[in-house]
Amino acid sequence: MNAQTRPAHIDEVLPGFEHVRRYWDPTQGSMTAKVLPGEYYVSRQEELIATVLGSCVSACIRDRRRGIGGMNHFMLPEPMGERDAWSSTVGRAARYGNDAMEQLINAILKAGGRREDLEVKIFGGGRVLAQMTDIGERNIAFVRRYLAAERLELVAEDLGDIYPRQVQFFPCSGKARVRQLRGHHATVLVDGERNYLKRLANDPIKGEVELF
Image (cartoon, rainbow, N blue to C red):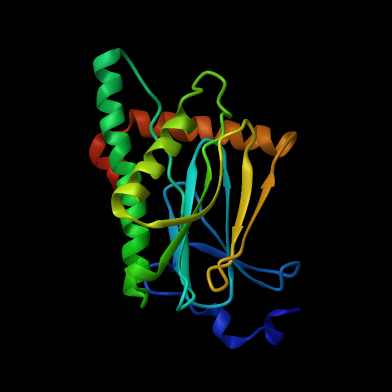
């Protein structure tokens, strides 16, 4: 299907998400929004939201009654230095997760969703960085604590293990697909994630928060 035969509404993006890369996926027969680390995206139309996760976690949150939903993608910083420095890094890490979850939920509510009708699916947290085996586990522990504290309904999860994942989420229907990545694709993702962690850990706190 070419651009001329696509429905006109598929080029509509909610305000604030113009920067997110979107493209037509002929295999899925829909537009796809690609969420990168530190990003989130919300939609209330028939389209697909996709990301690739290593030790990162994505929450897919949806208003089950109104078909408004979205996805985030967050990562904890790399531990650096001595114990005191590690404690400081963990403190910054919690804000990453909080920002990613709160921004996604607030954007869904702004688009017309209702908090009492939200349902959540969570993915990722793989042990893909051999020298930093606890990063994925810390992400998993955080998102579970957050959902429990906020009393949000968790309806599905695919967490942990040792493989990166490709995640596809359809916000209108709530359907999600997960595929394990191996071989070359996994190696490329792990290298990119390691570099991203180093950049976060070396940035000042103000710069880190602005990434999200």
